[in-house]
Length: 190
Image (cartoon, rainbow, N blue to C red; front, side, top):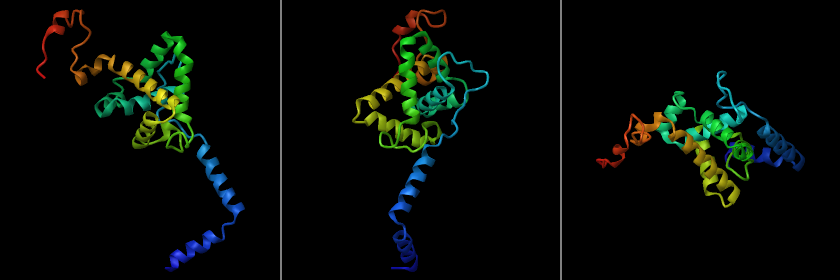
C-alpha cells in the first residue's frame, strides 16, 4: 500500500458512525437546497396558467426532446414552446393541474426515482437527457406517463409553429391561400 492509500485508509477508519451520518445528512441537505432556474421567464412574457418555474422546466424539456435543430430554434427565441403550451393548457383547463404536477415532478423528483440530485433546469443537457431517458424507460407507470405527456405536448406545440416547416418539409396547413389542397396530392421526391 502506498503512503497516499494508507493515509486515505487511516482517514476513513477515523470516521465513526456519528461523523458519517452527520456528513451524509449535510450532503443530502445541500442537495435539496433550491438552485436557480436554468431558463427564467423573459420579462415580456405574460403567462396564463404556468408558473415561471413550470415555464422554465417545459422549455428545458422541449429543447431536449425536439433534437438539435429544433433546440436551436428554441434557443434563438424563434419558437417558445413553453409559451405555446401555456396557452394550449389555458384553453383546456382540465389539463392545467395535471401538466403543472407533471412538470413539478420532472423538476423536483428525488434521486431514487430519477438519476439526478439537482432540479431538472439546473442540469446540463446530457443530465437532462439522462433524466428524460430514465422517465421513458421507467418501470413505474406514472413516470412513463409523465414522459409521454411532456413529450406529446412539446411535440404538439413545437411542430404547430410555422417556423418548423423547414425541419419537417411540410408546406403548411392545406386549404389556405399559401398552400392549396392540391399541394397535398403532390408526391414527394423522397
